[in-house]
Image (tube, rainbow, N blue to C red; front, side, top):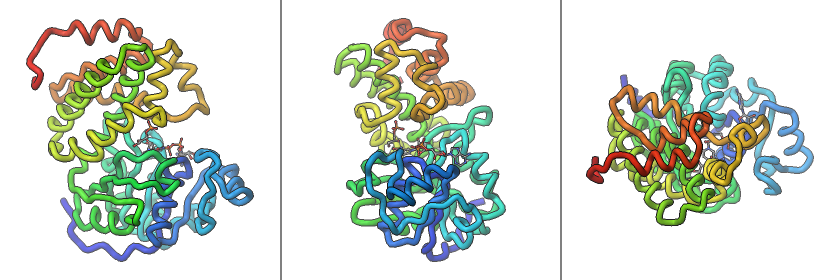
Length: 339
Ligand SMILES: NC(=O)C1=CN([C@@H]2O[C@H](COP(=O)(O)OP(=O)(O)OC[C@H]3O[C@@H](n4cnc5c(N)ncnc54)[C@H](O)[C@@H]3O)[C@@H](O)[C@H]2O)C=CC1
Ligand SMILES: O=C(CO)COP(=O)(O)O
């Protein structure tokens, strides 16, 4: 059932996950005038902030001294009017479950991860609804590199929730002259866009890393967007959402910029790198590696074909070489462009 009750005023924000994105979103909330606590899970992150005012995941950037960074979950979450959960997709369920008893009923909980859960194929908002019943799930997604956002560069994102009051209230609470959230009710479209663009960014990186040229990169991006649209629409997403910030917007950003971890991983794969080396513990997170196979599964269950996504899934699983993947894509039966 869709909740429609009004949202309480949002003054205190707690961000769970002190990685690059959680820290950037904590700064966003501070700039929007909220009081913010960032919950880390390792002492090194708290120590780096206490001693140098930095988060190593954001390089040398000096963080706002008004931020509170802590390991104390009870203190961070007590009295929070809004919780942002900014951990990787595959960690979202465990993190939500760990803090379930600390988040009050009716509080909006905004997922910030871009991916699909292994095993369940759940969207982040579905995980939140299952693990945090009584709270009000939303998702924040769009073209937004953490480093840009943390520096206060102009950024626009989408905040989606089934409940319009939640999407609009969260958007208002996070908005500032440098951060412009648009409200949406299309939770499926926003999340499929955010999840698939990471897989397609790996594909784009592979094309560039293999030296296949700008024409091939543009073709792959356009046909990749057709896949994102097909899967999204099969799951009930709206075309406008998929063409918006969290679909086309984020695909354009991520599939072309070396600032993207997914694109960079693809570049290295295209240049002959081994997936095991590129994803070894401690390396940067590339969500597309974890999403590709889930997306293929999801699509198959809905009778949708995702050839580029499937090729990425096989390449990252080392079942298919890069050249064989390209041959396979280029030798598919000819068809009409819209199909
Ligand atoms: N970095 C970026 O530019 C953006 C990232 N995102 C998304 O945000 C999500 C997180 O990415 P980043 O912050 O960049 O990754 P990151 O690797 O910088 O940080 C992840 C953080 O999650 C924490 N974590 C992992 N498992 C946890 C658990 N079970 N409980 C508590 N904390 C846990 C880690 O300690 C780490 O601080 C990903 O889904 C990513 O796609 C979205 C937009 C921009
Ligand atoms: O989601 C992002 C930008 O919108 C970040 O992309 P990467 O995870 O590929 O760095």
